[in-house]
Structures are given as structure tokens and as C-alpha cells.
Length: 287
Ligand code: R5P
Image (cartoon, rainbow, N blue to C red):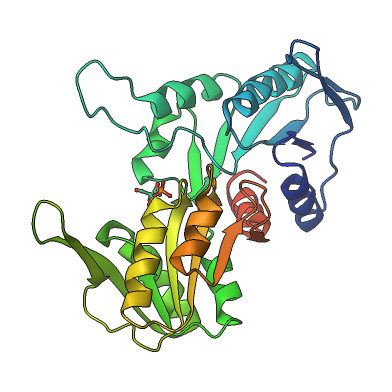
């Protein structure tokens, strides 16, 4: 089952290919002067089941995916499994006001046109998988992140909110430490307190685990509170590190000791790879 690497996910596609002992397709990619994307696949893929690996964030990478799917189809590929390490727009998964779109659904439907199966990592909400019109499966990077944190002497895992509690519980079980979630309490119109719901962070090496770090605002607020409560080291870990604008600076200024993300979006903080969990899911669902 040959693998076609999108330009947003080359190192990850390479790692998945190594784990599965599958070949990477040879292809030429370029951008025209007007920035439009071009790809040509050099191998004969007639009647082959092809795995495309491409993160769909930011938007130009989504267009690349559509064009790669068409290239595989036009070259006679029999089936296409699309691996989307980070599915952009996944936080726009419902309408908040009348007249709004469900953007994640719109894109999932388009991606499904030239796909037989979809694989993604830590979708923001489970119901996102149902937006695809072909079978879609998600895997979680939490085990890989926790395995990394275990080597870092972490003794307390925190979720930034109640909704993310199960992720913290899963990581804490692997590490063998306590977990909790941060509760936000509004005191008055301008004052909000944030602290672990049940446990005390004083003197602990804490890791806060979330699915996404975008502007870094959620994490920075949590870090400040934990430092105020005399936590020792504070590490932040996420699956999808978007690190928009001055996010990294915001985290460091708040007192963050280490930033950890995965390679669903390649960055300087991609210390953990999701290749093992994607490879496992591919073996289970499509190979
Ligand atoms: C929210 O539901 C997500 O799980 C993240 O907590 C959020 O997207 C992080 O965004 P930011 O880094 O901009 O605070």
C-alpha cells in the first residue's frame, strides 16, 4: 500500500512508511508563480490502494490534498485512504448562531469525494468523524505524549477544563500519577479564579495536556495560576501545536518550563511523533 506524502506532512509520512514497511511514492511538487499547486506522481499506481498523508491546515494544504486525491484517481488508483494528521476547521463543528455554516462538515464532505477511508488524530470532538461520508476513524496521541512525559519526572497531570478530563486520566494512568482538571470560577464581572478542582499543585511537576494549542491563551492562563499556587515545573503538552502569532512567547512569559507537541503539525516543538498510532490504526482498519 504505497504512501503519497503531502508537502505539509513529509517527515510524518516517511515515519509511517518506515513503520509499515511500505514505499513512499516518488512525485514532483511545485508552486506556480501565482502560488497554485502542481503535483505529478511518477510511479505506476494502477489498481493500487494509496495512502495519502496530509495535514489540512492552513488552507493551502487543504487544496493540496484535493489535488493529490485527484492525481491518484486520474492515475488509476483503486482506493484512497486519506490520513489527515490535523484536520483544520475541526473546532468549527457546530452552528452557534443561525446563518453560520458547519465548516468542518463542509470540508469533510468534500474530502470524502475521492476517498474510501479517512484516518485522523485527536479530532476535537468525536462527532466530527461522522461528517465524512466514508468510514472515518480517529486515534489518540495521548499514549505517545504520556510515554514521553513519563521520562520527565511528571507527578501531576492536569486538563485545562472538565471536557478534557478523560485525556488527563488516560495520560496519568500511563505515567502512574495523579490527575485533575482546572476549574474556572467567576467571582464577579472582572475576576475569575482557576485552580485544580480537587488536588493541590504545590511543589508538583505538572503537565497540562490539551488537544490544541492555538494562540496559547488557554494554557498561559493555566500556567500563571499554577505558578501562583507554587507548582514546581509546569510543562504544556498538546497533540496539535498551531502556535499562532506570539503563542510561544506567551507561554514562556507565563512561566512555562517546557512545550511539547506532536508532528501532526510540524514545528520546533514536534518532539512526539504520532506515526505509531496512525500506523496501528491503518493496520487495523485498511491493511
Ligand atoms: C478548546 O476547546 C481547545 O481544546 C483548546 O483548549 C483551544 O483551542 C486552545 O486555544 P488557545 O491556545 O487559542 O487558547
